Length: 403
Image 1 (cartoon, rainbow, N blue to C red):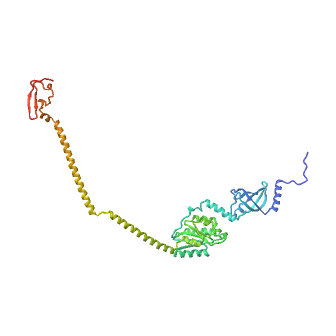
Image 2 (cartoon, rainbow, N blue to C red):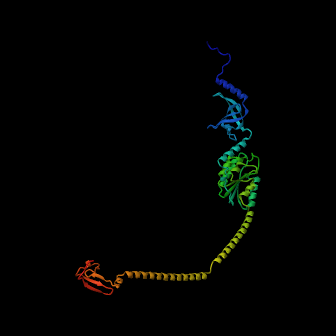
Image 3 (tube, helix red, strand yellow):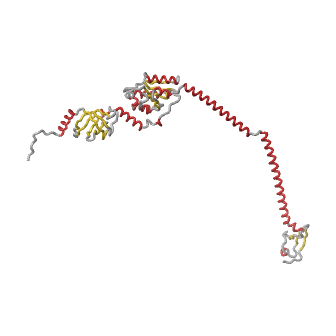
């Protein structure tokens, strides 16, 4: 059975998507849409691809690089936004897409969100950390000032500096403090003053104003220039209630330019007062120290004897030791003499001469002088020498008997 040709025109897919696109280009060529960002992707091209959704629906969206470069903040997943754009068809796949030309955070301004994001990023890098803050010099050789050449801020700074320290060297680097050119001008000024060897501290500031007026001091370039400075920087921007990124990065924050000038140089009048107080305190301390040393010397004198008395005492001590040594030596000699006499008596008792005194004699052979202790040692005919207590006699053995 052959197919029956339809009575209505048949469209190709390309024709259908073109017609849909034509309708959308007329009906939704410029619309505002509120929703939540999800699945945000940023490829190497720099375009933003994401979905915009609410509780019931979602639509694919794209924001080309030429448009997203104008954003003051960085979109993130989960962020509620209001976008302006057009709805059309991506003909290659037939996908319905929202082409975004502008975007604003929902419920808060883009500048406020951008500032909050910048603060979070710089804090994560450690630029706000207290440990990186440097102390200010007490007597700076030179003070650099970055502010507008005219206005209340520069007048207050110079007036206070001259009042507190007449003759203080001050180097003013005039800049724009608001507008699109202000941020790069402030960065250049900080870099210029860092090349002056005499500058040991820099004040960066301006008078009060609206948030938009102060926005140059919330610029990331200014924050990084302050962090990179070789000398400490005091931030004096606006009034006490205004806290800028420059205040958070600077080594010290002053609520006003007047307070900043008072921070960087001492008051010569107060220095004179402090000098007089210090001199008085030093004199009193020296006087107390001198009195303590005098008392100490007096105390030592009570324990120190005259050299003559010490010498006499030592002389007496020497005499006592000499007498003690003499007595000891005499006693030792006496004891030794007694011991020697006793030993001599014992030796005398054991001496052969003592035996002879009791009537005994010693007989030796004439031939070899050997003592004859038994009859066998001197047979008949042996010549012997007989020693008595007094004298000796020669004899010839004529008869013997062995016992």
